Image 1 (tube, rainbow, N blue to C red):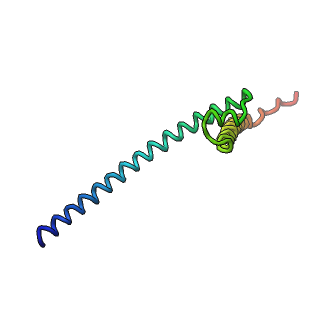
Image 2: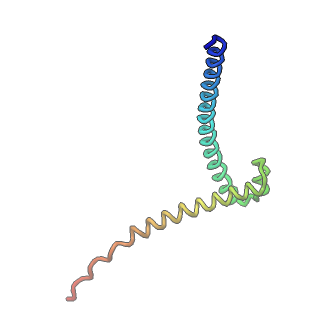
Length: 109
């Protein structure tokens, strides 16, 4: 094998390693970005829920966020649905706790 071929292989292998390393870094960055987006979305949904409760219109909230009314409405509905699910779950837990059998009736005297 000539020196030129060996050197070309080394260059290709180094480039492959660099690309794979760069892709792994991007995967980690994507994970961090996804987590940040989840936090942002939760914060926005909470604010939209508060906005709805004080009578803000979707249009006003969309303008404040700088996103479309359709997307704002979607996020606001998610916030409402999340709250309903949370309340429903706690209601179901309360019902399950209350489903204990009645104590035995007192014996007839």
